[in-house]
Length: 255
Image (cartoon, rainbow, N blue to C red; front, top):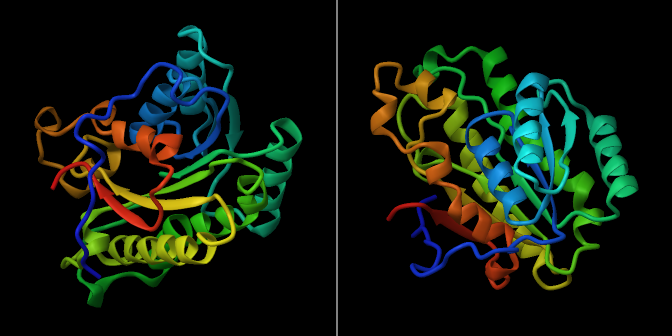
């Protein structure tokens, strides 16, 4: 699957109050792109639900948002590897009870695993990566659909990768899971476009200095790679009403 990726409008900038009163759930929010996006969304007026398995990291992001004087975020510790349908139902019930709706959902959490040939890929690792990268976004989206449909303009964004749009040797389960994410996004967009206001898009931020990138390229100088805060503007655009006419699209930071 290889298509032409889109970019956000060249002259677009996040204005003050861009995400006022919007409730946004972000997975993998304890570090990297997830943490950077959560802080920027909060600064733009959103109430952010921070989801990750790493409680200490969530607390650090929480404190940063509060100390900046932004809307109080919510912390939801959850290990996507072991989560089941009941866990996702409880997540949706909690959001419904506390907020009544969901205006945005960013699927950012991901696991790389290892860069090895398919012939040597361990099945247990394959299942674990698929559970976190593909099964979890499906189960969470399905559980939250009713909440999303209560919003006037809900947006679901799947963080993706170039290797999910064109297969590349040695990227194994990670690449296949991201290809699945792209297809899941397109299926949801096609199914929901005609009868709901919920939008679905994917975003490839390109090379970013995160822990996942370090695993893939351990010898790379992180100072020569984009920092998480430098790649989140398209996510703010996609999670806002400014992208209200976009669904079923693949976005990238660069051409």
